[in-house]
Length: 69
Image (tube, rainbow, N blue to C red):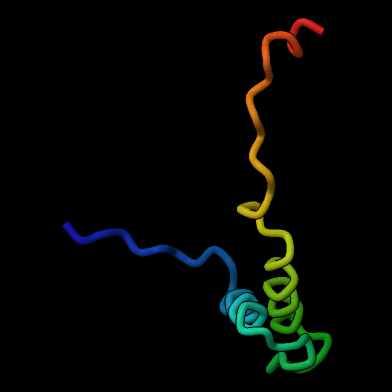
């Protein structure tokens, strides 16, 4: 049985923007004309690298004393 491959949920420009941000490129390096749908997806991917959920702090378990309060 072949292992499953990750399916892309968003259009390709989104992932190109994420890759550009990870490589340290600036916003002006986007390959699409301004005010297009692809440009918006590219910028969305570029900005999402800042708000990754994996960078969020982990929720610690609530102690019984705090639950009683």
